[in-house]
Image 1 (cartoon, helix red, strand yellow):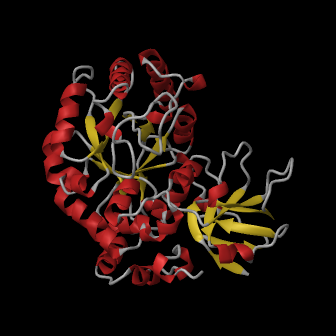
Image 2 (image 1 turned 90 degrees about the vertical axis):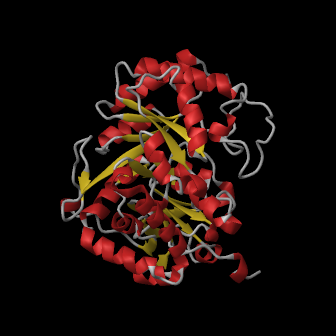
Length: 430
């Protein structure tokens, strides 16, 4: 028996299937429903999530753990038997009975941190790390990341939920840079939203729903404004000793970015590059304008996709709309690449979960993207995908996909099963 599930976290593992963990059992494959996801104090060897929304925040947090994970439908979950020994492949999404063959030794390459990775035909590609703290910086160094592409500073919080201050941030930022050294580090300023609300923040007007007040839209609102000032002052001090960049979250227009860039320059010296986090279609379509206003650009694929498809990424019922194989999505990224031009693409990185989906990284290479930021523990698996890719083949595949009529055709081109897509509302039974 082999089940074709939706891949989520790369990795290969074997273990006994459990629906509830038993005391002292660490090498099991745990099956959990999406609504039952909890912080995993002792991570299992592998995870099977039933009915998950792949781009949701709870699923994104699993990325940092590096546990091989796939997503199955409720029907597929019913065919899995408690106590059976299974293997799980988080890259292909397959689940089978028995043991898994180990990764060949020649694919277990070590990599020096700071160097670009390469395709089979020696095209340089940067695999950067998206992290939340010191452990992530250490992981980035250990897997040979090219850089730290993003630190999510909203996850840096003092004990007991108290409000951070400049001294707290400076200590935290310095510790991350020290752990990552000599890798350059990009810090994303405080990115608060309705689903990432810190304990010290009270009720704020407009902070409701998917498209309300969030990210840089809150930078002029107290007490967020004082914390952003504290972060900027702390980063200015740390920049004297470490190479770093600053990312402004959820920027919708060049005018908005110019405003906050000029405000940040009150603290940050000119040697510190500042760039926008592009997470809306409007910002993505402003690529020509970014060249004159931003030192670099980071595209947040998760939020961009939910804006593009009009579907909340935290709601499993509409997860199928956030389709990484939709030709319209890939045409949108092709438009981004073409409007950015060679100069803009040299300063652009993609963040989020899109590139880890099977077959998508070669497609993005074929469209011209060369810089990607992801959870550190995904980097070894993605480097193996790169090592098997050739640019001419990737460009040809991308051209074919751009001409496809629907995502089913794209999945067929990539040799994927229809089971890899969550059920859509119009064909859901029951």
